[in-house]
Length: 178
Image (cartoon, rainbow, N blue to C red):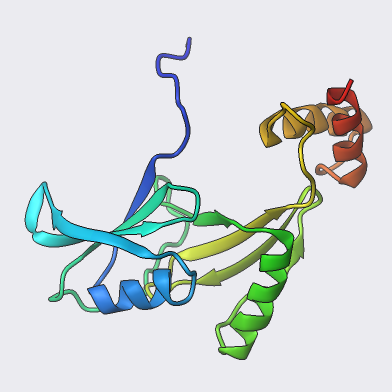
């Protein structure tokens, strides 16, 4: 099928939360995403809608209701469900985050090397898996992360490797820098 929509990027992600305090405590106080405004959910005025700044002008929003009880999500990776959301952070931030999560006794996976990026996973209070993701490279001038990854993937396939590694990224950057 031919593409029928031209995406320009993620505008926002909206989550179903419990109450305002639980959402603010996590999204603002743990992840550092400032609560920039709130208003009623315009499709259901009995629900509150919180808007948190992700740091790049995009938002994560959370529907809250003070009558909702906070209970952990039991996702079981059902088709159509969200597995996790990934928040983009710098290499410095992911390392500081690991230390701060541990100091605050927030269970996490520790930093995992994914070849082209590092990942750190932990759960928000309702059980949604959150990943802090940090690329281990910068794309060449005038190129995007997607450009580098697309080319690194082709190089990886030629090597018959399981996943993209540093050498694939280096070769892709060299190719794209010509």
